Amino acid sequence: MSTLSTLSVKHTATFQGAPLVCFSDLPGPDAELTPAQIRALAATLLTIAEDCEVHARGIRRALDVRRDYPIGV
Image (cartoon, rainbow, N blue to C red):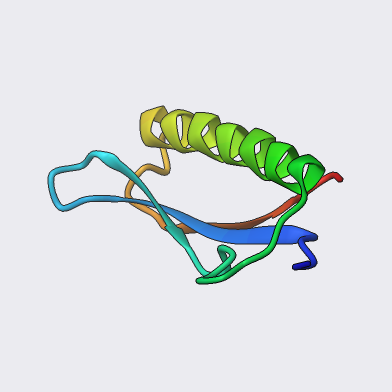
């Protein structure tokens, strides 16, 4: 079983200005997750998606923003 505690991401934008997130530590191939870990990962991904959209509307849109998101299990 994989241990998940945080997801590290970079909020940025495509060349066309669309919101984009780059992940540096998603669970890789053959990751073994319990149902509780999958739910926690899904909730964290939803938060990241919402923050990405907010970042895209913000003043600092052109700047890359790195952030760690804790995964609660």
